[in-house]
Length: 375
Ligand SMILES: O=C(O)C(=O)C[C@]1(C(=O)O)C=C[C@@H](O)C=C1
Image (cartoon, rainbow, N blue to C red; front, side):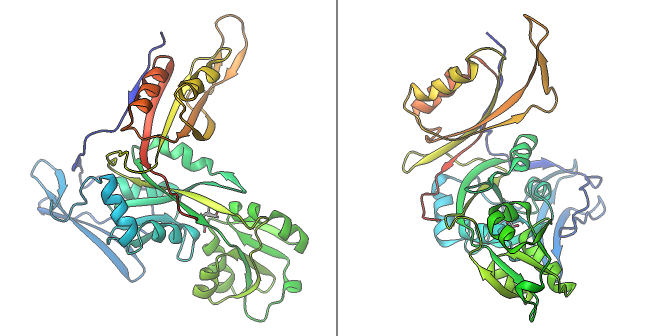
């Protein structure tokens, strides 16, 4: 039997090591300030323009840092997450992009009362959660027209965050430009590559050259700030309002059913329940050989567990493997699978135990309530 490793939900951990030399890659929207070591209270401050957010952390002399227990977000139970979704608590939620991005709307759908914290890149949002700057991150993982957001699959594995929820958000794209600019004046259109892909047919019909930028709202902001006369942006109607642009065309996505699925990430897992529909996300790798993937997926089929998503990504550290029998070299993959069952369900636990018998690596990324709302 191949050696296997399973990394499952860890117990809640409210402490982390920190020192003044802790470093973070430059984050334009988030700044870290570490006071001298002698200060007992360590203040991590994240600021964006005139908005500043701060979290008070207590340091012990040996440098172990823990939050004031009263202010600490407790490890979430599935019930607490449900409450947060319905009435919203003042959680700090990171998203990628600037104000008006769809990701911000998704963060607000998950936590209606949250303080949404913009991050320049997906990596920044992951780090912001890990470093206690925010409580959650809401990041896109797949879109019904454009497919998977591969970067976030790779980051899920690189970081140790847990999936604690999902949000489905209906994306309605608008073509927008500065006041007075007409559709026939436009030569170029700026947006996030996913958004451009979702409007492929419409933009081709308009004869516009596509230019990819970090996020949809950032595109709108750029067009407005530079007062561009030959370029428009594809973004939300909220972005048009925020940056003072005129909407030239509405609902320009190639299919009216344009849904993006976002993941909610946290430092701690939630307790999986069976009180409502749950989904579990895992990642695993397999030995090379005929039928191994079939065998892996059969552990779910045998137990009537429905799979809702499967994605494969190259295994970066050892992307090629040479077969023992001949000199053939094979690509090596990681398989990401979402299945419709809770880890609290014995059937799901049996399926994973079975998979672990022949998987070379297996990690549970999270077991969380399904978003059954109509986006
Ligand atoms: O640019 C934005 O507004 C985003 O929130 C990013 C993003 C994505 O990465 O897929 C999210 C939803 C839409 O599908 C288009 C773009």
